[in-house]
Every structure is written in C-alpha cells, then in structure tokens.
Length: 136
Image (cartoon, rainbow, N blue to C red; front, side, top):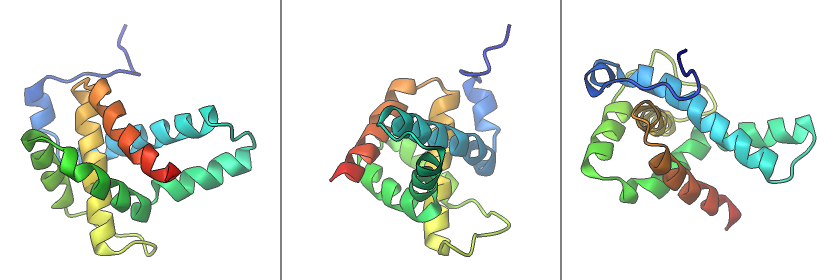
C-alpha cells in the first residue's frame, strides 16, 4: 500500500517538479506543522486554532520565518530556496507584498522539497527555529 503521509520521490523525479509544485506540497506541510504545534500547545477552541493558524501561515509571517532560517541553509537548500523565490505565480494576494509572497513561496518550496526527500529531521529542525522565534 502506498504511504500517503510520507510520500517519497526519487531525486530525479523531484528535480522535474516546478518550484510552484514544490511550494504546493510545502504549503500543506508548513500548515500541518503549524496546526500540530498549536493543537499540542494548548489552544482548544476551533476559532482560536483557526485564527492563530491564519496568522502564522500567511505570506508576511512566512517571509519573517524565511529570514530566520536563511542563515541555516546549506548550499543545496539555498538553491531550492532561490528556485522557489524566483517562481512566477500568476497572482499575489492583496494582503502581501511581492517580496513577501516570493519569500513565502520559497519557504514553501523548500519545505516541499525536504518533505518529498524524506528529510523529516531537517524539516523539524528548521521549523523549530521558526517556532522558537514566535515565543520570543
């Protein structure tokens, strides 16, 4: 049976994906990690969980998250990040600047890439740095 929670692709197949395809899966990974953090962090009402999730996964917050992890990335991760940042989405939300949205897309592409490579420890490590910044 296929593992839908931990899909894996060969490096060649990952290399064939566009930055926006990586960002598509990375968006879900980042949001799931954020939801997991909030649920295990004591928030109980659906409304408070939803409000906090929206606040933490919007483009402006992801832009700030990207700034935190950028110095921690190795060369390969930096290349994936740049590839995501340079992607050309068809639309940018009104709530985000072009720069914020580019960095949010880059962050999502990186998270998607790490997820598809099965690098869960690295994902958790980078996300931990982001989550720590929310507590300070």
